[in-house]
Image 1 (cartoon, rainbow, N blue to C red):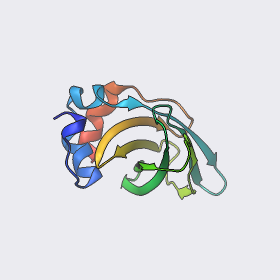
Image 2 (cartoon, rainbow, N blue to C red):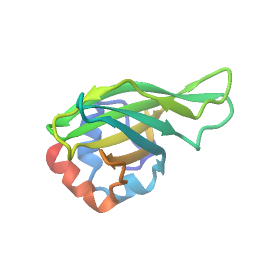
Image 3 (cartoon, rainbow, N blue to C red):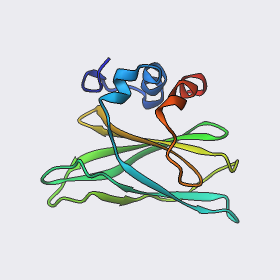
Image 4 (cartoon, rainbow, N blue to C red):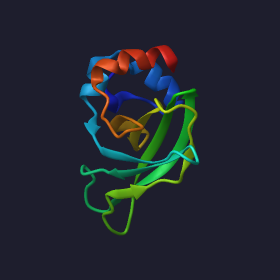
Length: 137
């Protein structure tokens, strides 16, 4: 199923059903997501840049969901705005393990359009690990 064909549904359910589908990931653009970690408080937040926005759009936080003890899903939405704003810094969330991973999905008009999958040390996790996602989602 192509990204443009995904109906409105649970983000985790779609990510689970599509995580092994190479064409799903190939049709999504990559955003830039970096993580700021407070190890003493066991919290993290994200700084995100979406360079694919056009005209009068901005990215907004939509949802945060812990999928397992060490993977969470952060959903963003592209919304109309009076001016272009490609940057977003999220609120902080707790994490349990230092090997925590974050899947960031971007939706526009109820369709997934972008993503990034990163670890707590800021490394970008390659697409080859997406098969693992389907097991935990």
